[in-house]
Length: 399
Image (cartoon, rainbow, N blue to C red; front, side, top):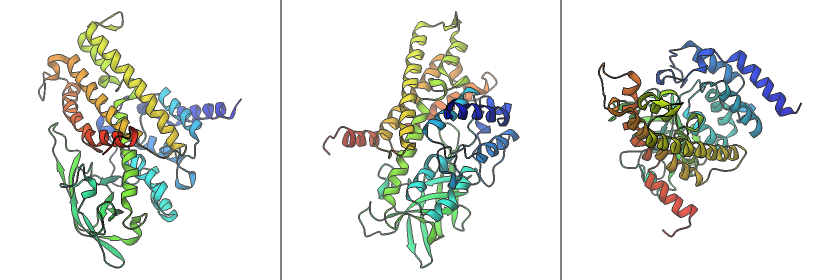
């Protein structure tokens, strides 16, 4: 028996023993496990599953063991993901710390910072938010004006951020600040970490057209941040920011592939929804034109998901993130928007509801999620920004 086959058998046995049965079902939105100091677990099994996976470092399976990760190589991680998929296991932890901050810390942080911040991320003990965009610095992120003034043993941070996802629930923030106003805008930015309970930090949720409030305005009024919370070199934060954005864009792109290659699962799957509302004949969607549209969407999602996975494997094996993340972000967000257009097409008049007993809960959710999906092409860098990056860095077109 090869080492990899033995690893598969051991992984399968461990998952069978340690993944609760309720964690092998489609996950309702209100049971997503974000972790954090103030986490509330609607389903107690969510905490059990998180703790079990974290004990192996498998919430971040390819991070080094010395920082709490699983220490798996590319082939072992592929097997782990296959085995998780086999039992339809829910993600044990959803975390900006794992998706975005952690990879940046692994590349740019000091050894002391890595040992301080990475293990709690793996264990889901700290929930992070991102302090990037500002009211006057969205697509032109380098134009940010939130400042951090050197006060000897600490920085004094003043300013505001916007579209700060889940800032009202976050424990800590990774934040871009201007530390040299006289330098060219890309060269006077630094990367700070600080506690959201620090005096002077306030948040205000922003209600979206969908009715949800996942984003916040975040304000900093004379917030003291210890000097040791600076990641990387002073005034060199733009380098970290760019690397982190590439990880974020790859994460957002993943919305366009989804479980099973269909851009969704259960009552978010175009195939399932089309059969439910348009009917089926011999196991196929009854409406030929809708069946053709869903088949094309599923094939695109499957191909896209496999391409993203290949690039993700290469990145985890040491290849630096590159302009491919912009390509994935652009295509993935468009694919996710097309998924919701298909869902609404399949649901017909049942997609017109906003509230009321005439509509099922998932119907109301899908309608709101369709509206929310329109923001996919804005967040993480607009589609126009991504196309500019592709034009310059991939196609080599002139400015």
